[in-house]
Image (cartoon, rainbow, N blue to C red; front, side):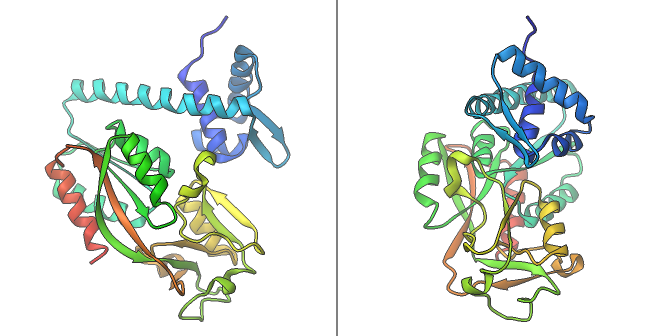
Length: 299
């Protein structure tokens, strides 16, 4: 009987996050046969099917969803353990931030890198809302960044309490729609929900258990299809080359350089961008500097 290994778990998580064996293999820089064989061996070892395969992609079975939830914890803990010992051995200075998919995080980290050149390991972890919370709660990241509004507040505050996290408000923003420069709606100065109905929407994938915690402020109107992706670059490419639109804070770094424009959404509620940290944790000097850089985006 073989022993389950971390690499097999990484294969499963990649397929679950990317929706297909092909996309997962590409993301992990391994051949698709290698990845498929690893997962088949794992399924045989477990005596159950993790994925339902079809031409449309790979979908988690009930047992598969249970396995993925546990595998995420195991892989994250293994990486945290490895990093802890690696940092001890090399005496590197380390800073990590977890967040939803926002340009301003990368911009702030660039300023951090310039200001703290002696830090040899700086990590930016972009992921789903629940994984940002988990990454911060387990101290893999010193801080986490998510947005809060009346739709997700009850669920988020409950998760914060469960994970012994507190938050500070970084700033507020109104929901913006982003689209390609040549989009039929680009000529409008303000976008309404009815304007969006005929067009596809691109959204970031979220954990199925917490669909109400999506990081996209706009719930897609029923008429247009929805495209889900876990990657910010993929979203930008789709928006840039189709009539699909996305929604977010509107805080983008030189959007027109990548052929994108942003427009405010009419009757948008106020959203708050918040900084998560462990309760009773005092932010390090580098974290405080990072926060100051982020706050400039909301000034």
